[in-house]
Length: 386
Image 1 (cartoon, rainbow, N blue to C red):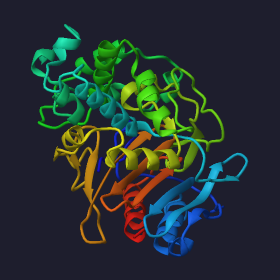
Image 2 (image 1 turned 45 degrees about the horizontal axis):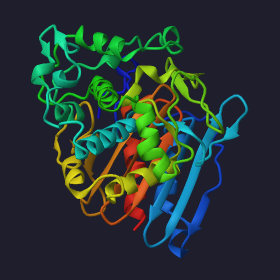
Image 3 (image 1 turned 90 degrees about the vertical axis):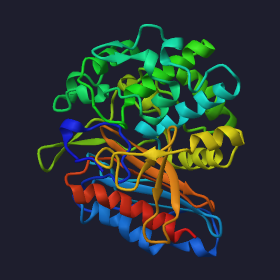
Image 4 (image 1 turned 180 degrees about the vertical axis):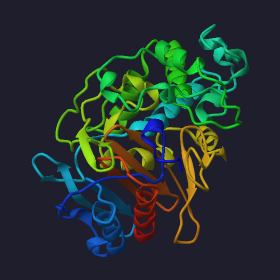
């Protein structure tokens, strides 16, 4: 888990993440076709409300599915500090780095079609783009980009996180983001989480298909799966439809509304808007073989050790997907991703036996314990949804 400092905020993954509630207004549990066992998940409920109570986060919501009991969701805290509107589990949110899983899936579909070579150098598709300051696209493969073994820095680290208002409404082109990354010193690590890798992967998709990554994600994933609440925002700074407000810390206690944001700074590595339900549907479909053939799915889930300081202990990274041991119920692995943008933190995953859960908070954590509490909540849900 990364140290939760605003200076290093990113949409990095984060399997533990969080928020502030001044008074604990909570939404009712919302059941969707529940079976008898899913009339309530007490450990999950307690952990969720602990986020907005003990950890003083603004709002939190979760959607859970268990094969033996069906759908269950709950929410705690507030969606809007100005109106005190309660948080809900069925509204649109920014999903940040979970976008990476969508992008990796499109790349692997194109690999299956013979239009991209997974072990081809970046230089083949983007000649001359990754050059200078010791970086060379001739020595970096497409696979390296997707699993963060390229050795490239992250342009997100170069953004001024203390002055988000200076740039949150502006458009960034992929070329600008790549230039920002290449100007940084080398991470000098065999594995280094970098959203820049996915900006490059998005450009490779565009070179192979003639369509930008947003259009390909829409055509290949969002449409076929019927993810009706998921969309590519482009330069639009507002979230369409019902959604919670997103908040960022100012000092130790004050929150400010940062809901409006141009997500071009994340692009293929972090731009999507979605819902908890759509995210559960997507990850279940992906791991269930609906989007990739068995060969490409096996490649997707071949993992390398991840740096726990940039993700969290036990995490291993595949191609746009993370495996994590599930604490508290036998050490089962779950597969998923998560994301951080100004105002939103998401985390979720699925297990081999079909359990799934997606969690969101509309704030940023003020302490390491708050970040850890997000992971605790997700683990409780996946363990309890048996």
